Image 1 (tube, rainbow, N blue to C red):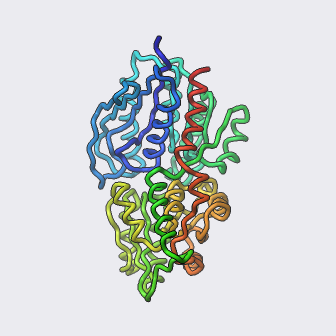
Image 2: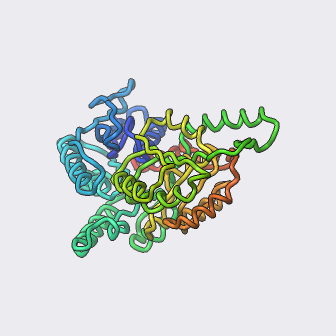
Image 3: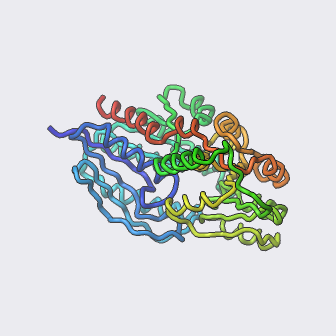
Length: 408
């Protein structure tokens, strides 16, 4: 007797980089442990494309040894990080997904989505296949639209995408929201929907690194080991996307300029606002910022070890008052001091859960400098945080919800 057939739509999947990729992979591992032995899980994703400057290869079709998992990577045209380019790339992905599922049957369709359209695609495919739908929502796309759309298109774009959002969310049997801060947006709009809150978390790679760090700290006799026996410029690291959501071009040039004698900034990443950042750095005459291309996570771990402080920033937009940046979990697991430009819910999250983090109002260099000088520049492992937000446990709970839905 054949078991349940599940389909997962995720625009990013390993070896591609990014929060969506890492989250999807962890969910798949948890599902394979939780689903019955006769279940089959198919993943429709894209060939690696997260960053134009990060090229890696992956098989077009990949199957595990048991035959329970099939990964299909759909090719996209070359594109950059602009909204128009990304829209074209997604249209290509959606068209190929429709062709791939033609004539197939599924019991449950899952979609993990940060920009709404993967969720809409999941709702469409679930309807065509008469399948149940599980959505994993990682952002509030409609609330971001006033900052993403040109002024002249907002009158049409916002109502259009709001209608798509209502259709997709109402079509779902269950919706997971990655941040508890999203409740204030979604609950009033969808009072009858069943919501869960399985957040981002700390991956095994960082848990293992954390354990090694604790052992090294235990071998050292002091409870806090000073990193700076003599005067030198501190190494401040940012690793991640350089886009409009991060707003680095609005904070970093002036911040780095004012900390020229105290700090050296290293940025590892790429995105649609990288060029704007480079222009602003040049205009400001900032010379203590080094920009590097994205790297794989094992190499990124090495850069975390070299850093004295980890930097995080969300743009000065109301919509970012609800999110918990996925990068925050990764940063916190390292035990490094964190300088974070966040407000409202993410700032409260930092205060409640993360030791030795200093927050400041986004896009305010003076506030950032003040927050920087409040940090304790030392490694302080955060055992409680890592244990509470282990990705494997969070995804095991989420996989349990999905398996329950598939069985019902």
